[in-house]
Image 1 (cartoon, helix red, strand yellow):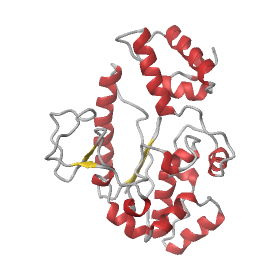
Image 2: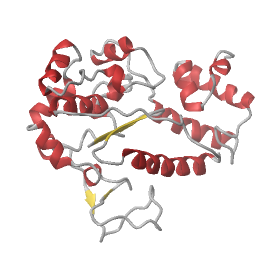
Image 3: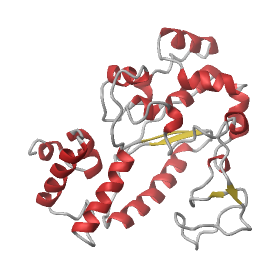
Length: 271
Protein backbone atom coordinates (compact mmCIF):
# COMPACT_ATOMS: atom_id res chain seq x y z
CA UNK A 1 0.00 0.00 0.00
CA UNK A 2 2.83 2.42 0.80
CA UNK A 3 6.54 2.48 1.62
CA UNK A 4 9.30 4.84 2.67
CA UNK A 5 12.96 3.83 2.64
CA UNK A 6 15.01 5.91 5.07
CA UNK A 7 18.77 5.73 5.63
CA UNK A 8 18.56 3.66 8.82
CA UNK A 9 15.00 2.26 8.85
CA UNK A 10 12.10 1.35 6.60
CA UNK A 11 8.34 1.82 6.87
CA UNK A 12 5.98 -0.36 4.80
CA UNK A 13 2.19 -0.71 4.80
CA UNK A 14 1.33 -4.17 3.47
CA UNK A 15 -1.96 -5.99 2.99
CA UNK A 16 -1.59 -9.75 3.34
CA UNK A 17 -2.01 -12.86 5.44
CA UNK A 18 1.67 -13.78 5.95
CA UNK A 19 3.53 -10.58 6.77
CA UNK A 20 6.48 -12.34 8.40
CA UNK A 21 7.29 -14.21 5.18
CA UNK A 22 7.16 -10.97 3.21
CA UNK A 23 9.43 -9.13 5.66
CA UNK A 24 11.89 -12.04 5.68
CA UNK A 25 12.13 -12.08 1.87
CA UNK A 26 12.41 -8.30 1.71
CA UNK A 27 15.19 -8.11 4.29
CA UNK A 28 17.07 -11.10 2.87
CA UNK A 29 17.20 -9.69 -0.66
CA UNK A 30 18.28 -6.23 0.48
CA UNK A 31 20.88 -7.63 2.88
CA UNK A 32 22.44 -9.64 0.05
CA UNK A 33 22.66 -6.51 -2.11
CA UNK A 34 24.05 -4.37 0.72
CA UNK A 35 26.63 -6.95 1.84
CA UNK A 36 27.81 -7.44 -1.73
CA UNK A 37 28.20 -3.68 -2.27
CA UNK A 38 30.07 -3.02 0.97
CA UNK A 39 32.06 -6.29 1.23
CA UNK A 40 30.53 -7.33 4.54
CA UNK A 41 28.79 -10.41 5.96
CA UNK A 42 26.01 -11.20 8.37
CA UNK A 43 22.61 -9.83 9.29
CA UNK A 44 21.82 -6.24 8.40
CA UNK A 45 20.04 -4.16 11.01
CA UNK A 46 18.06 -5.23 14.05
CA UNK A 47 16.81 -8.80 14.25
CA UNK A 48 13.22 -7.82 15.07
CA UNK A 49 10.64 -5.63 13.35
CA UNK A 50 7.60 -3.83 14.73
CA UNK A 51 4.17 -4.64 13.35
CA UNK A 52 1.09 -2.45 13.78
CA UNK A 53 -2.24 -4.00 12.76
CA UNK A 54 -4.51 -1.57 10.92
CA UNK A 55 -8.32 -1.73 11.18
CA UNK A 56 -10.64 0.84 9.67
CA UNK A 57 -10.43 3.56 7.04
CA UNK A 58 -9.23 6.36 9.30
CA UNK A 59 -6.54 4.17 10.82
CA UNK A 60 -5.37 3.14 7.34
CA UNK A 61 -5.20 6.71 6.03
CA UNK A 62 -3.33 7.81 9.15
CA UNK A 63 -0.73 5.03 8.85
CA UNK A 64 -0.13 5.76 5.16
CA UNK A 65 0.14 9.49 5.84
CA UNK A 66 2.70 8.97 8.62
CA UNK A 67 4.74 6.60 6.44
CA UNK A 68 4.87 8.93 3.45
CA UNK A 69 5.59 11.98 5.64
CA UNK A 70 8.46 10.26 7.47
CA UNK A 71 11.22 12.21 5.64
CA UNK A 72 9.48 15.43 6.72
CA UNK A 73 9.42 14.30 10.35
CA UNK A 74 13.14 13.52 10.29
CA UNK A 75 14.04 16.88 8.77
CA UNK A 76 15.24 15.42 5.47
CA UNK A 77 12.94 17.59 3.35
CA UNK A 78 10.37 20.37 3.64
CA UNK A 79 7.52 18.43 1.98
CA UNK A 80 6.90 14.68 1.49
CA UNK A 81 6.92 15.15 -2.28
CA UNK A 82 10.60 16.18 -2.28
CA UNK A 83 11.70 12.73 -1.14
CA UNK A 84 12.69 10.29 -3.88
CA UNK A 85 12.66 6.97 -2.02
CA UNK A 86 8.99 6.59 -1.09
CA UNK A 87 5.69 5.88 -2.85
CA UNK A 88 4.34 9.39 -2.24
CA UNK A 89 4.07 10.11 -5.99
CA UNK A 90 2.09 6.96 -6.80
CA UNK A 91 -1.54 8.05 -6.09
CA UNK A 92 -3.28 10.58 -8.33
CA UNK A 93 -0.37 10.85 -10.74
CA UNK A 94 -2.50 12.41 -13.49
CA UNK A 95 -4.09 15.06 -11.25
CA UNK A 96 -0.87 15.99 -9.43
CA UNK A 97 1.46 15.72 -12.44
CA UNK A 98 3.64 13.00 -10.92
CA UNK A 99 3.50 10.45 -13.74
CA UNK A 100 6.90 9.00 -14.61
CA UNK A 101 8.02 8.06 -18.12
CA UNK A 102 7.77 4.28 -18.34
CA UNK A 103 9.90 1.98 -20.46
CA UNK A 104 7.89 -1.08 -21.48
CA UNK A 105 9.30 -4.56 -21.01
CA UNK A 106 9.56 -5.02 -24.76
CA UNK A 107 11.78 -1.95 -25.10
CA UNK A 108 15.36 -1.31 -24.10
CA UNK A 109 15.59 -1.56 -20.32
CA UNK A 110 18.49 0.19 -18.55
CA UNK A 111 19.70 -2.50 -16.15
CA UNK A 112 21.82 -0.08 -14.15
CA UNK A 113 20.02 -0.93 -10.91
CA UNK A 114 18.68 -4.45 -11.55
CA UNK A 115 20.97 -7.22 -12.90
CA UNK A 116 20.02 -8.32 -16.42
CA UNK A 117 19.80 -11.97 -15.33
CA UNK A 118 16.68 -11.15 -13.29
CA UNK A 119 13.48 -11.60 -15.28
CA UNK A 120 10.84 -9.17 -14.07
CA UNK A 121 7.08 -9.91 -14.06
CA UNK A 122 5.16 -8.51 -17.03
CA UNK A 123 3.33 -5.90 -14.94
CA UNK A 124 6.56 -4.39 -13.58
CA UNK A 125 7.87 -1.35 -15.43
CA UNK A 126 11.26 0.39 -15.30
CA UNK A 127 11.85 4.14 -15.52
CA UNK A 128 14.58 5.96 -17.43
CA UNK A 129 16.95 5.68 -14.47
CA UNK A 130 16.65 1.91 -14.18
CA UNK A 131 14.44 1.95 -11.08
CA UNK A 132 11.17 0.10 -10.59
CA UNK A 133 8.19 2.34 -11.34
CA UNK A 134 6.32 2.70 -8.05
CA UNK A 135 2.91 2.22 -9.63
CA UNK A 136 4.01 -1.30 -10.67
CA UNK A 137 4.41 -2.50 -7.09
CA UNK A 138 1.95 -0.32 -5.11
CA UNK A 139 -1.82 -0.79 -5.29
CA UNK A 140 -2.41 2.70 -6.64
CA UNK A 141 -6.03 2.07 -7.63
CA UNK A 142 -6.98 1.06 -4.09
CA UNK A 143 -5.06 3.98 -2.59
CA UNK A 144 -6.98 6.42 -4.76
CA UNK A 145 -10.22 4.72 -3.74
CA UNK A 146 -9.34 5.05 -0.03
CA UNK A 147 -8.38 8.73 -0.26
CA UNK A 148 -11.26 9.49 -2.69
CA UNK A 149 -9.76 12.61 -4.30
CA UNK A 150 -6.37 14.19 -4.99
CA UNK A 151 -7.43 17.11 -2.79
CA UNK A 152 -8.05 14.76 0.13
CA UNK A 153 -4.68 13.09 -0.46
CA UNK A 154 -2.89 16.45 -0.38
CA UNK A 155 -4.73 17.33 2.81
CA UNK A 156 -3.41 14.20 4.56
CA UNK A 157 0.11 14.90 3.28
CA UNK A 158 0.03 18.41 4.76
CA UNK A 159 -2.14 18.27 7.88
CA UNK A 160 -0.57 18.59 11.33
CA UNK A 161 -0.71 15.86 13.94
CA UNK A 162 -2.88 16.52 16.97
CA UNK A 163 -5.99 15.70 18.96
CA UNK A 164 -8.33 16.32 16.02
CA UNK A 165 -6.58 13.62 13.98
CA UNK A 166 -6.64 11.22 16.94
CA UNK A 167 -10.38 11.77 17.57
CA UNK A 168 -11.10 11.23 13.89
CA UNK A 169 -9.70 7.70 14.08
CA UNK A 170 -12.19 6.80 16.82
CA UNK A 171 -14.91 6.94 14.16
CA UNK A 172 -13.77 3.50 12.98
CA UNK A 173 -15.27 2.03 16.18
CA UNK A 174 -12.86 -0.90 16.14
CA UNK A 175 -11.88 -0.70 19.79
CA UNK A 176 -8.27 0.18 18.93
CA UNK A 177 -6.58 3.36 20.20
CA UNK A 178 -5.63 6.08 17.68
CA UNK A 179 -2.37 5.56 15.81
CA UNK A 180 0.17 8.28 16.56
CA UNK A 181 3.66 9.08 15.36
CA UNK A 182 5.11 7.41 18.46
CA UNK A 183 3.55 4.13 17.28
CA UNK A 184 4.94 4.49 13.77
CA UNK A 185 8.43 5.34 15.05
CA UNK A 186 8.48 2.61 17.71
CA UNK A 187 11.87 0.92 17.72
CA UNK A 188 13.54 3.59 15.57
CA UNK A 189 16.55 5.20 17.21
CA UNK A 190 16.00 8.83 16.33
CA UNK A 191 15.05 12.19 17.73
CA UNK A 192 12.28 12.64 20.29
CA UNK A 193 8.61 12.71 19.34
CA UNK A 194 8.55 16.44 20.08
CA UNK A 195 11.39 17.00 17.63
CA UNK A 196 9.63 14.95 14.94
CA UNK A 197 6.40 16.89 15.39
CA UNK A 198 8.27 20.21 15.27
CA UNK A 199 9.54 19.27 11.83
CA UNK A 200 5.92 19.13 10.60
CA UNK A 201 5.67 22.88 11.07
CA UNK A 202 9.02 23.65 9.45
CA UNK A 203 10.49 25.07 12.67
CA UNK A 204 13.63 22.96 12.47
CA UNK A 205 16.35 23.44 9.90
CA UNK A 206 16.29 20.92 7.05
CA UNK A 207 19.59 19.08 6.64
CA UNK A 208 21.96 20.76 4.17
CA UNK A 209 22.96 17.30 2.95
CA UNK A 210 20.46 14.50 3.48
CA UNK A 211 21.54 10.98 4.44
CA UNK A 212 21.21 9.55 0.94
CA UNK A 213 23.47 12.23 -0.55
CA UNK A 214 25.90 11.92 2.33
CA UNK A 215 26.20 8.15 1.87
CA UNK A 216 26.96 8.72 -1.82
CA UNK A 217 29.60 11.32 -0.93
CA UNK A 218 31.17 8.91 1.58
CA UNK A 219 31.31 6.07 -0.97
CA UNK A 220 32.93 8.32 -3.58
CA UNK A 221 35.37 9.80 -1.04
CA UNK A 222 36.51 6.40 0.23
CA UNK A 223 36.83 5.01 -3.29
CA UNK A 224 39.05 7.97 -4.23
CA UNK A 225 41.33 7.69 -1.20
CA UNK A 226 41.25 3.96 -0.46
CA UNK A 227 40.30 2.10 -3.63
CA UNK A 228 38.79 -1.31 -3.04
CA UNK A 229 37.72 -0.53 0.52
CA UNK A 230 34.31 0.42 1.88
CA UNK A 231 33.09 2.12 5.03
CA UNK A 232 32.84 -1.32 6.67
CA UNK A 233 36.39 -2.42 5.85
CA UNK A 234 38.22 0.79 6.81
CA UNK A 235 40.34 0.95 9.95
CA UNK A 236 38.70 3.07 12.64
CA UNK A 237 41.43 5.71 12.40
CA UNK A 238 40.66 6.22 8.70
CA UNK A 239 36.92 6.40 9.42
CA UNK A 240 37.45 9.11 12.06
CA UNK A 241 39.65 11.08 9.67
CA UNK A 242 36.95 11.00 6.99
CA UNK A 243 34.25 11.85 9.53
CA UNK A 244 36.17 14.92 10.72
CA UNK A 245 36.67 16.06 7.14
CA UNK A 246 32.98 15.66 6.27
CA UNK A 247 31.81 17.47 9.39
CA UNK A 248 34.07 20.45 8.72
CA UNK A 249 33.21 20.67 5.02
CA UNK A 250 29.42 20.21 5.15
CA UNK A 251 28.62 21.39 8.71
CA UNK A 252 27.04 18.04 9.59
CA UNK A 253 26.00 16.71 12.97
CA UNK A 254 27.84 13.84 14.64
CA UNK A 255 24.59 11.85 14.70
CA UNK A 256 24.14 12.06 10.92
CA UNK A 257 27.76 11.11 10.24
CA UNK A 258 27.40 8.23 12.68
CA UNK A 259 24.34 6.89 10.85
CA UNK A 260 25.97 6.99 7.43
CA UNK A 261 29.38 5.70 8.50
CA UNK A 262 28.10 3.09 10.97
CA UNK A 263 30.11 4.62 13.82
CA UNK A 264 29.30 3.72 17.42
CA UNK A 265 28.44 6.32 20.07
CA UNK A 266 31.85 6.08 21.82
CA UNK A 267 33.62 6.61 18.49
CA UNK A 268 31.47 9.69 17.75
CA UNK A 269 32.62 11.28 21.00
CA UNK A 270 36.27 11.04 19.90
CA UNK A 271 36.00 13.77 17.27
